Amino acid sequence: MTTASWGFAGVVVAQLATIVVVWIKTRAAAASSARTEQQVTPNHGSSMRDAIDRIERRLDDVSAGLGTVHRRVDRLYERWGGER
Image (cartoon, rainbow, N blue to C red; front, side, top):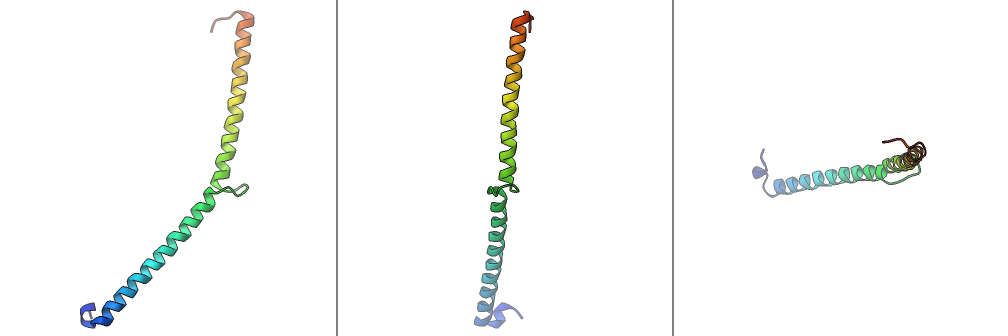
């Protein structure tokens, strides 16, 4: 039996089915969005944002340490008169 043979009731049922499908997909998208937000929002340890923050801090430390090494090497070259 097709929607056309059901008449007005068939149209109403089809519209309700569409509304239900849209509602279900909207809820699924909202849940997915909430999970993503939890991963990118700092939460004191386990989120992606926290991991990125830790990596960035470590990179800053490494960069500062590398600058110190460069300065020490420069001083050694100056002291011993070596060429680079």
